[in-house]
Each structure stands twice: as C-alpha cells, then as structure tokens.
Image 1: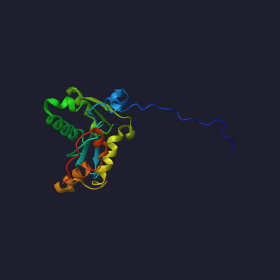
Image 2: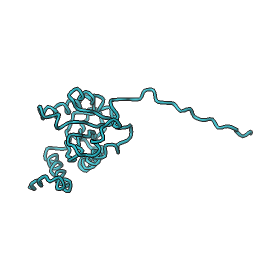
Image 3: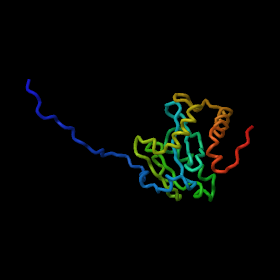
Length: 189
C-alpha cells in the first residue's frame, strides 16, 4: 500500500449559532475585579435532582463582602430566575441601585433573560462558556451549599428546619473576612 504523502487537515469552522446573551465579562470595569466597591454580584444556580419541574436554588454572592443570598426557585427556567430576581430587587425598594450595581452570570439557559434587569440600571455581564473560574466566589459558595444539597437529591425534601440550619451554619463558617472589614461578629445562639 502506498503511504499517504499529505495528511488532510481539518478545516476550522467558526460556530455560527453562538449564543450571545449580553456583554462579555471582558467589558466589565476593572474596579469590579479589585473588590473595592460594594454592589457587584455573581449569580449561578444549583440543581439538586435533574428532573423536569424540579426546584433549584438561585445563588447570588457579593464580591466585596462575599455575602451570599440563596433563593429556592420553582424550576430550572429563565422565567423562574426572572421572577425570583425581580422579587429580590423589589425588596430593596428605591435603594436597589445601591445594592445591585452589576450582576455577572454564566451562559446557562436559566440566565437567558438576565439582560432584562439592565432596564433597571443594573449592568449585566456574562462569563465565557465553560469558564466557571471567572466567577470563582460564587462557585466557592455553591460548594458550601453542596454540603447540604448533594447532586441527585431533590431540593423539595429539604424542610424549613434543615434550611435554617444551613443558613446558620453558613453564617458562622468564615469569620476572617468579616473581622478584617470591621463588622461586628454575629451573636451565636
């Protein structure tokens, strides 16, 4: 058999149907990365059991103080995330622009409508696909949440007592950052 003289090279195609949900994380101001200003959040979702209609947890982590907000949403859809995020923003009333200056999310389908909050004056940025390290603060907090909600377990089975234990344990897990910011130590029960 004759040896093949030239190897065929694969043609490099650019993906035509690339999903672009909004501004890239590269366009995010540098002061967000320095963590000097309060109000810049990272958003993600934690799924327990992968089943249609199964609830999930929407997680938000503030970059400067590393405070997190965990909200149980009805399912893994963009509409459920919209409802929960809008309800959260409404809780802050007229002060929401001081609390939420920017939100950085990933390209998951649940964040397809995240750019709608830009109409409220909140900047929205998206990480590169498959680059979870670009919002590492949130990923770290999600790892803490996974201690209580393992993959494959339904979030529905977590009762109120267990949920309050999760919140209590999370609030006392890392104190070095709180102490360095000069905030008072929370009272232990």
